Amino acid sequence: MDAVEGDRWRHSRVFVTGASGLLGSALVDELVRRGADVTILLRDWVPASRLIESPAPGGANIVAGDLTDLPTLVRALNEYEIDTVFHLGAQTIVGTAARSPVSTFESNIRGTWNLVEACRQNAALVRRVVVASSDKAYGEHDRLPYTEDLALLGRFPYDVSKSCADLVALSYFHTYRTPVVVTRCGNLWGPGDLNYSRLIPGTIRSALQNEPPVIRSDGTLRRDYFYVADAVAAYLGLAEAMAAAPLAGEAFNFGNEQPYTVLEVVQRILAFMGKSHVTPVIRNEASGEITNQFLDCAKARRVLRWAPRYSFEAGLAETVPWYRDRIRPPA
Image (cartoon, rainbow, N blue to C red; front, side):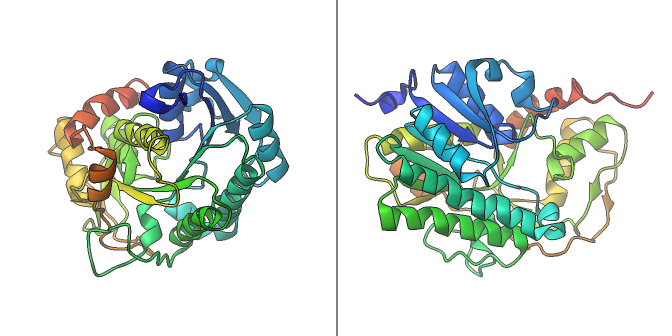
């Protein structure tokens, strides 16, 4: 029986890109805990990363390298005899993509074609490839929430990078039968996110430092905020399902299906942290962002029997203490 069937990850040989990021570090932790033989691709050593501070690196093989280096990817999959790949590595910040589109395209698009090409070259080994796309890949649609059958209409650099990566990944299934599935998640958040330009960690840090949080937009943008522990369960469940059902070539939405405006998120965080009296600073200077983006996850519920477990407040109960342990208020 395949090692992944029945959620039995022990001795399964797993390769994770983007392992030092928010989702990657949480996924690696869980895979190591479940006894998988994990190999990670690590470009930068970030001491504050949840991955580095956790026991996970001691339980995982580390390949020093970059997604733009195809020979390194081919070698890693071959030498570590990888059977399952989670491709999470990407440049994930919308503002960074707007400032530096070329490096974002290199990481997100070229990095994806290198990864799936390495899987194709190791077809005798690799049985499952889960590629992280994004709800941003859909671009702007009049019909909401997004369903998996909508066209991918990215217009701005980050959105385009995810639309392209999504299409590239699925093209390898349709052309070469590489066993690829794609995930399109809402805005991930939770312990370990060091990108303080993002709304939730930035707001928590401001509250801990007794400063008013800053909202770059006008506060009305609506998004699906998806807690990282639910995302880990979704990714593992999807890979497990691939061992039992013909899911390759498909895409799955994952989110909470409860969109909030930016201002609502900030107010809920402030209320949770006992700072309801604080008034956020609304700069209304964001550009190149879609007003409303949120997901329909009926397919994941129906096909995978999956559903998120965390409410927003339950996620905050785990997330705020993580930041409180690391961020000291001013003297």
